[in-house]
Image (tube, rainbow over all chains, first blue to last red; front, side, top):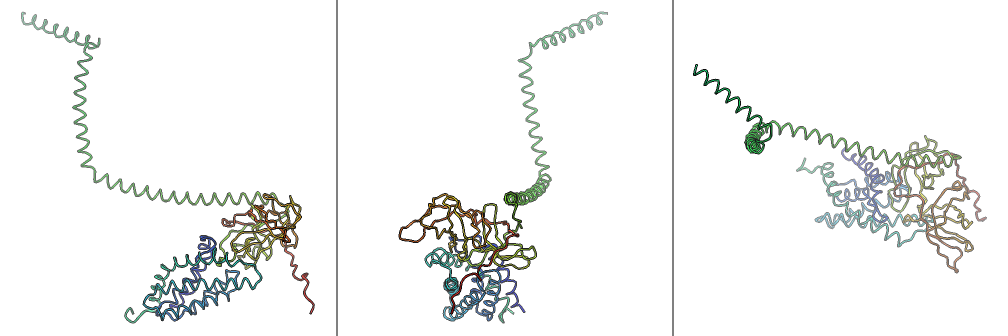
Length: 166
Length: 281
């Protein structure tokens, strides 16, 4: 039942992303707190619902964005996959895993966006996209990753209480 | 008898001395002496008064301190309340200024009917330049309607739900607007980009475009009404080897500060897609 916290949390994250975060760009890049939330959630040890969160997040973001929701679905699912793979290898250093998945995940989502827009016939400069959007976005996502990881760890402990804690 | 005489003399002498002293005093002869005397008295009185006051303050301090602290807390609460009011009023004043400018703009173009809307969000993807407004199909908003501010053209309605709509800004990489340069008397195309800059394309090589030229919508293609300000030419790139000239534009609208926009509700965009010729198999 506590898993349902994903619905209000991701809904709120999308609203905050759309109304507040987008107003504070670095060059043309912005932080993506939905992406960071999904990443941080998928990296928690006890969490088994990473893919559910990826699906829900992509549906919510797809409602607001003019980019189709399946682009986000592929991106967020890829991020959860990365997180699961990396968590098993660097489980002793969770923040390192968080930074790595945030970096790779942001890059992946931006590559997917770039490919979709290019196939849609929009002339987009790769150099501009990389220098003005992707790199600043990666930096901002890394910055917000630190507090969000802590919050999600506490949330994971609440949703999936360990036997000692219970 | 002798006693009575001597008492009368004493009284008379006393009276004369007193009268003399008074006459001398009124005449100002004792001024320096009285100054020394009163000065000393005042000093002594001040010393006593100040010590008394200090003792009184010391004894009454705890009660006053509590009263003062309470009063201070009340005043601090009042100050914070007033600060909140000031911020609220400043915000309202800002909104009023924007609305006044929009009203002026709508008065200047009375042939169009407008619906004001607040910007409530932006597209989460930094690659796209869309805004979300708080008016939708319930307010008569339809897809394709132009969106303007008092400064000029902002974009067009891209998607509508009952109480909100998504607006594609002219800075979006997928946005193109047919424009007319009045000074050069030529048509061109304004296109957006991922960086949010807009450029002027497809300018004929013969056209004499100069920096500072005003760019207006031409109305060609039926996507936007004519004569809406889009921006101003900053500089022109003219290469003889290329088919067209290009120019960079300073947009009329500050897209980073969009708060309230106007939707032109009596304009219907024409769908020209069926008119585009397709290859016959």
